[in-house]
Length: 375
Image 1: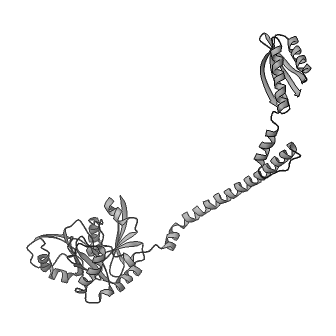
Image 2: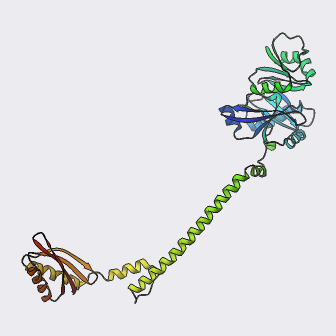
Image 3: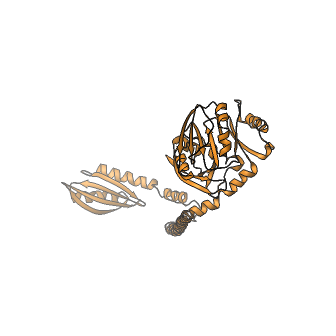
């Protein structure tokens, strides 16, 4: 459910009553997010009922002006018209008059409905003010005029549209009506304001006869919209400025850090490879230089000697072997420290430079570290 504000205006465009109405789902879908609704008590609007053919909107736009031309006193070009194809009712107003209405309504109304064309829960309703009256025959016809013109022709209206019942709302206690042979229900109000309040409660806005369409559709007043929400606009801009400044600071910090890291990497490269010229693809260049330092033939020969020495030595078990640039580090396991020393002497005799490192007892064995440097 959503609500809309309704302003009732007299012919001088003065608000005579304002109210909020709750809209059903169907009305909300039709009206959407449009602004307030203006209800105008004006005789500038005229309505005609035609037997419109079931055809396209394009064909109706061609046919209706010819039909109106037979009803209007002036040139059809001087009139603005809209229609409801479901009931064949066409509403008209002179262009000059609707321009004046649009310029005179200073509020946020984007929907303009003549009071006589308002749909309500009443099937047939006659509303009589002090000097004006309107009759609304649901889905048949609307008319607003001076009170006497309405009441004096009421019997003809009833006969023409075959009305069987009529509800009459009035601010006059002594209503002069012709002799009618239909069911009448009369309700008297203390003032026009009380009448309008009750009338607003029975409105049905699911299918409004809106004259603010086509060239008279209210455009978005961007300045007014900005003035209304400028606090939120300024707040959003302030937040954006803060986030933007924060992003600039972070970017600057990352840029400085990146340059420092780049300088550090270049210094490290020059330290590790002093004879090399730095190229653009640093990663590929470093990978290539590292690959050049991998195990060559002499290193493979050293592995062969280490393996043969293990095979020829009694009670020697090779635990692990590792390679660090220019040396092998192996771990062997023996029964005693003497056997460990014998293995070192054997490898030395085979042409490798061997140093005995730390050794420790593991269960009933001696486990020692041996460094092979020269090969």
